Image (cartoon, rainbow, N blue to C red; front, top):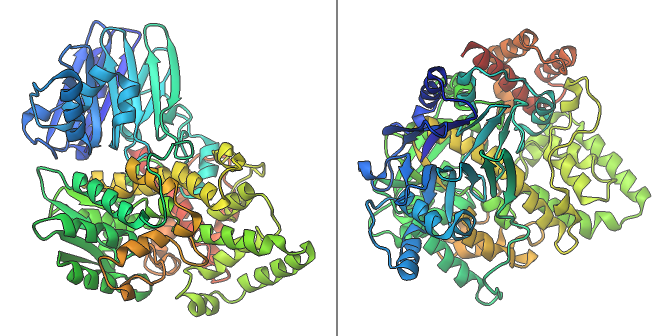
Length: 638
């Protein structure tokens, strides 16, 4: 895992630009503390710098920037190519080539591109990655990002310069004017994150997952190609219910076996939930030595899964490490959040994630996670809801739906603690969920239902813009009549929520503490397998991730499987009112110091007061505003 930054210019690379490149690389040194390399092609006005976190072949042979044997290509690469040994064999079979200088996956990655071409190689690769590849002969820059968006990649373009980098914080060093995008602020307040390809700045864009940007510097052309789409991917495996469990087990074992390859220790994040339990169980079954598993515990038992994680670790016989989140750790990490996330980001589970990454960095460099299981196999409540909605609610007479809607809305306004305490064993934040449901019961189109379920419904109170937002939802997904609404929701989450929320959270936190996280469930072979599963093998009534539950029975007793989905959260509502009260008040007050014309500060203060007075739980909306304020303060002071 690494970080890189580079520039190609129409003008001669000045001393100032090259100095800016060096300073930008320093900004992301934590992504690769083991080695920094730089390469400059003065004739072509191209330069790039790379920070390396050494994982496979930790010798200098794996350092970057790396050049192809024919000297046509130069690459900076962030990630891991899990099937690099298979590709090595294919290269030997196709070209009788076996003159490797290293045992690194980067060399195989680059050699494949040299022999098969960029686009054909992307079809071969199974891994997580972002890369910049410079064609020294044709003066073409290729930028690409893995299919699930595990690894980030950004770019900036003006009339003379094209700059690319692993993180946004790099761009400020070059001194070009950057303008806060008010539309992105509005999307952020609704979603908790900024969806691709947008960023907090108008002038900077993200490479979208599964996309290849081809920048023809000589002919001044840019082409954006999608090389992978979950929706359009053709499954290579013929699935039948009789053998799906065995096939799933075999594929998962192969994927995890490849993801355990490293020249440094590898551990597993074990929350005690379904996804991480399956990953840890399979990893333990194929490893000769005991695996190390890690989880966090909390004093608030409503958010604590440590008991289940401990029990599972005993069943799979792992070396288990429990990390307690106490008040001191939480308050100390909150001050680090604006440094970790270099554009506004407000998924509150960023706090336990950052604590976990900080603490486990003392144990190793590489950790497997269960991320992606929800989006691939149907783990979120909204998938269950749309299934129930289509089967029952949608068929009711409009007048009956209106009465149900009125009842649900009334229930959502009952004293927060009464309902939340009554239903916490089934749903966290029950009032908020009821309120969202009341806003969709009279809708019929799945895209509108999805839009209303995924966001902070009160967010528009904080802005002076009442026009409908473009949330970057892929309309083609919802126009596809060949798939169910549940699959539409999953595909959209895979394209947007997974890369722009989940993987932003884990990548930035892990890289800030110089560790690497790997997510087996988003391997292309797993996605391929899951595509042809029947709906009931994912969601059956009120039961989610059915096939994961069924496979898990092979490894652990059933009684540890049938448990409610807890997530990886914190009691944010109470934290804002108590331990983080001053921090939140100060952050809200400081919003007035930042030039965000779209914000209605009177409404912001009014909402804060209502939350503190327990009129309603506005914790998610407030946390968004707090993180926005903290980001502004960090950016302006940098």
